[in-house]
Length: 380
Image (cartoon, rainbow, N blue to C red; front, side):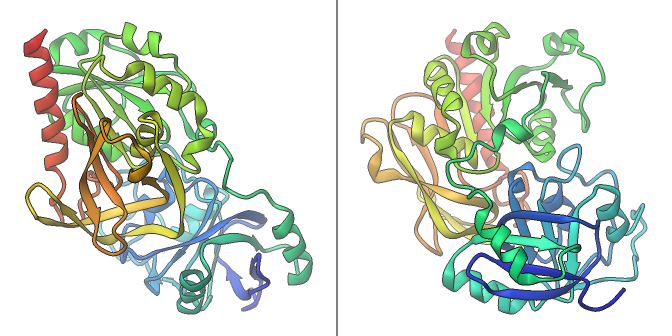
């Protein structure tokens, strides 16, 4: 394998020679950078990264390998993966295979020997942009032409590509989904929570199950009447990829569900809530992707170190004042990191409380949601 066996090309014409360390092929997506030092397996399998070519800013990736326990969904979703140096050595007692073998197994086009510092600084300065990653094209000029012809992530509904095709269930206290439905488990559990799957991470489901909830995970396209027919004690609007404004059916469903039961929105779930409240969302210049973003809880003044992965944000000023109020703010750019409805038991976060790089800074969010569910149950 030669040192320049692949090309990464950005839509503005910036090119990076690279070495292929994944599957052969060609992929297009939005180039973004992630500032986490570890967690590459969780990043690869996070459905929120659908449509994106991810650059890791930490230079040395892959040293602890890959295992089946740390995945966040059934398979990887990134369009491509870019690192400075892929470790040739795997050294961890939990490792089941190398990262390179995992990338090839799942047909993920990936490269290393890229100047990821230069790439990150370029994306910070110019903003996230379309990119192409190819191990089969020898001419970066021809690849650039195809990059510019590729669709933008804006206005595209990526949720349909990552949501579950059929409902499935997750037992209280469980760490994996049930192979077959067992509705008797719902009756035995403390609460039954419906999770609308816009691209949900397993970490969210494990946190809820750990609090004694039986979970029904349903497709993003399920109508409100079918969701309510499951008699949920609470509803969670999950994370997911892409432009929230393009997921019009989800916005309409959330509006129908508002007031029926306590609701918690996470990441894309918050953005969809903001749109359902009558507000707007906007695209961030280069997004928030990483495990070190400071967020302040305005009620307590506490600062949480959070994990984030989103390219859009809620414009709080566009939401009617009687609908929502700000609860959390990003200390880097002052964007909305949390909000709640002024009269209904509905609240949301832009960051990922289940990831907890703090390591436990944000887990109170799930307990707060269960408290809202308990109050609603007592009031019935």
